[in-house]
Amino acid sequence: MLPVSPRKSSTSSADRSPRPRYLGLEVAGDPTFSPRWFERALADRLGPYDRARGRPLRLIRWEGTRAIVEVPHLLAPLARVRFSDRWTVEGRTVSTVTVRTWGTLIGAKAWIQETTR
Image (cartoon, helix red, strand yellow):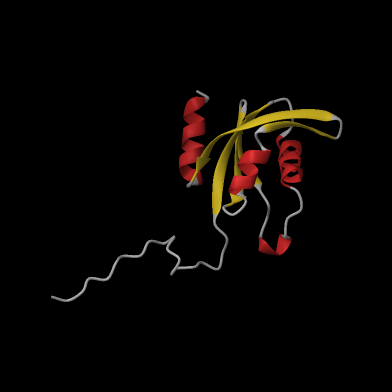
């Protein structure tokens, strides 16, 4: 009997992709801020980031009190901790909590649309 080789998934350590991988974090917070300002506030909350490795985050969708924020997968644990807090930016108090982590942004966008209807 011949040995069977194990199947490798796209996230296998043998299949390193040259491009960064991203996760979607669902963040709930105060809807009175503009999306652009809120995106900047979250990016500042992550702290300094090596721009050569890609963008630190991107606001994908904003619906009501919830937003989907795209972050590099290596920053996801830090982002979950730092986004679940109350902090002050430019004299404005921001209070957010990380609700859920999405592996696919398509699923995140569909889910957030359903919850706001």
